[in-house]
Length: 463
Image (cartoon, helix red, strand yellow):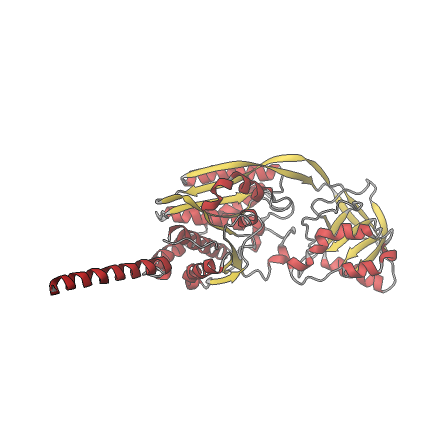
């Protein structure tokens, strides 16, 4: 009898222990993410810092094809080069997907100060602005520092050229004057509008960027000038000098053009249907070279995939690099990706975007559930060895926004962006602004995060 009691007791203990272990396995892995992936992290970081391949490839793209505005031959030639080079890298799949994009062309443009003295003012038409008449628009400038001030001075704005001289606070706040300034000025009878460039500093470098017109308001030309010239015009008004300017813009829209998203993959070994997608936007504005915005983000993602392949690492899930087209003036790349891959969206484990420059990385922001954040923080902790382990809230990006709205958790690369908006959307966004080692560290951060998420036993929880 005692023998049977012992056997029964052992069986019960076995069941209890087995149940306890199963519960433990579901809640936390016996071995932490850090323990499981520290050695692989070290290899990936070393492989990413081994050479300047990312910087060299970015230089080839920027210096060979120049800026890459949607609808331009520059963009399509750059995409051709990317696809050909990716195929040489030997990824499992490399392909493009068609995207229809808006085709806005800048044309010639000028801004002349006629009084109180003569001066050529640097100007950049804002993306989507209408043209002026061929002989330009000439008028007196009225300077305001907010939409509220414009409303208060409505009668003074009638028949004038309104300049929004709004000091930069943070991009998300100040950019509304670029986006909505033309329609707000037109409501008060302005004949054209200007905006102080959206950035904290300037060396006579106007910033372009997207704008939009309200449907029920007359369209007027809209352009950006430098901080220096905006301040000068403001001071002149303060002295009662009534500055007079002539604005000429030849911008126009052509019919929508054909472009492409670019995709390269390393297929998963156990769960190839589950996908970690990461990348940046391959288009840029038509000034500078689009090196920071967002050539560097694209190349860092590409190089991350190449380093993983070179090290012979194959995660359980599929790693998919995507270069989305037309982020700057339409978001059609991100929107089209969401439509074409709608059936796959439930199997998208994570989406990661790099679109804040490629300065020294600090970590990632996470956009998703609280439970997902816990696991995201654990993965990010692996990057403590390069001081890039931060994991903040509210991550994502414009291109992955459409699939995040469909439930996919999103993350955005965090960098030291203290200088980013000095160059953003300007002629200064050139290769010399990037540091090869910092770009390599961005590569390492992207590679570690995406590989581990694609390989670890658990998925980041959506809810």
